[in-house]
Image (cartoon, rainbow, N blue to C red; front, side, top):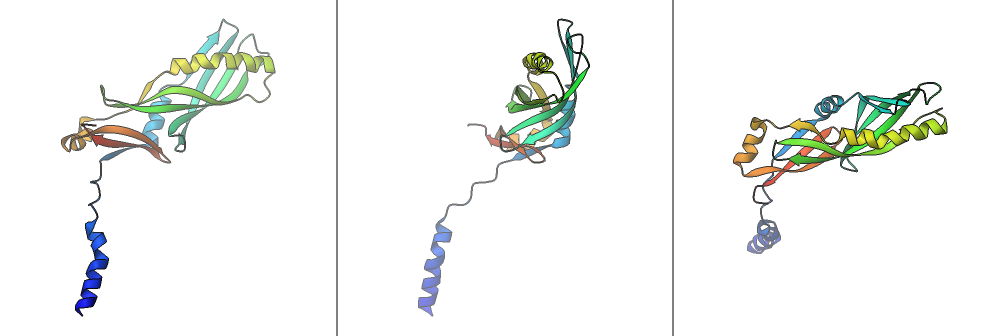
Length: 183
């Protein structure tokens, strides 16, 4: 009987010797709906090229790209003007990197990058003129606020000694992980 008790105790010893798991860190979730609303406020965007071409970029659709840890927008591009025989319509996909800005407690999208521009039926010279305007449009989008944390949202993590740290893109929104204030 004692031998069985000793064998059982020795078998369980490694489980007791393990360090306790690290205490869970606070996390905050920002829903896809909140992100979409912030993104929608940035559009429509209108840009022209010397009176020859005008682009209107509108109707964003939200893209969540967890594999790249980025968010994006699927946009409608409408091009018109004397440089085109007929108005052209296409689709533009942009992605943005994400960061937390401590000075105003916001989540921000920045570094817009063009993923794809689809202009079916557009003559090559017209498509080239439209592509020439894209860097200007993405530069004009710049950095913008996706979410501003309220003092209430940050109160508990703050009293626990944590600050927002890493932003992770999920299938249904964003997750902000917190880290100890000293790190």
